[in-house]
Length: 333
Length: 155
Ligand SMILES: [Zn+2]
Image 1 (cartoon, helix red, strand yellow):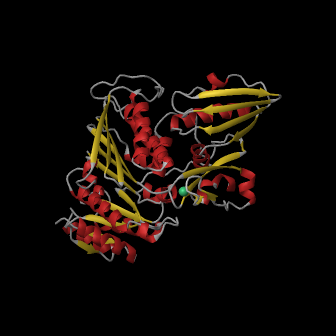
Image 2: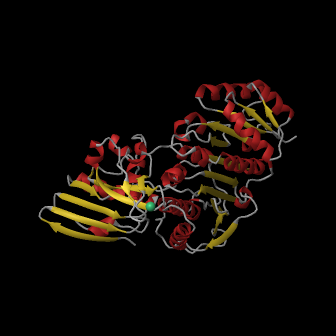
Image 3: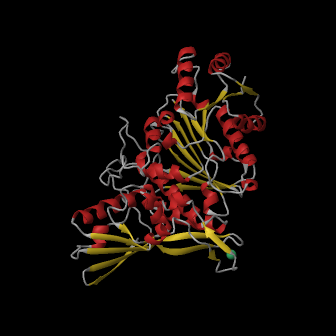
């Protein structure tokens, strides 16, 4: 039976996820211990698991029990349905980024210290969004940015058929965001995110039969007509509050381990300096992750990858920075 | 395409960069040879930068710094300040002379910018004073998180 099983001693997690389960029309169970979560999972491999991973100690304990009782690489463990919850970002949670059990990370709403007034904290809205994410995770596939929205959403789709089209798309997206009332710095940061994910889809996604990235050494300023398969679909959706962007390629070449490694890097730290000589997607995607609300990677290997970004409109940039954050990966072999 | 305005005054080359810094930028090509010991880069009109632009930036300014040129960044836009904070080697040893600080009016939501010297921000311990909104006269407060926007001053 499809249901949500929570493993967290934090009362705020129960307070947040129990209503989420109701909204998603899924039964809610509080597991209490990792052993009891594993027992439930063995009976019910379809369940969505929500697990507190706030500290390395809590996480390691959970991982050890899963390894003993179920097996880390057992078919019973479907990481596409594994949701980790923490108050920190991925950059401070290396054990999460390196975990073989990683599927999703939800940052506990309100954990970032920004002085937004309590009435502006839209917990109910965050719960509604989480419930849609859970509904998608409970389904067969994670593709389709429109499924992460309610019914009243406007959609625009653009087919990118040559590399130089990106500039026009990015600039007109920024203008549109300003028109619908996004803060100018927010609009700039969203436009840059669109720039990065479109560029990745054009230059980093295409692989040849041997799995080699075809344009790894190609300058990003190169004008290219995109073949039928190399064309990229770019979607913009807005429901008045939340903006969604989606980029879909027809290669399905995402390397999840590598991706999590990129996202967990902090270039603020001297350990990771920008190397001017190395091309590639790492820096761009890390910057996108730093400034976005939700980020979803959905990949069917060898077939397609959809990258989705979600941003809540806010009155000020400070409030924009304080938005609900999650990172999701859906991988299909 | 970005534009670069250059002016030499004595032993200082002043460079003003206008436009978004992206994959098409060729700093070496548009700035050319540096023959003076001091280079001041004015960055008020750089609205946006992508990761390829960041790489070209680091490559170019690192090569200038390696020649022993005294490098200063002035009037840094919010987009530049974000990169300075996000990337540890973005400044390539340059002194960040002055930056634009973002404000948002608490009454009408208007966005404003104020130019501050880095040294002055340090002197007031990052406690940026409010501004008067130019549109409605209301109170405009600093619109970011001090520890994040001024993070580079604490490194
Ligand atoms: Zn005002």
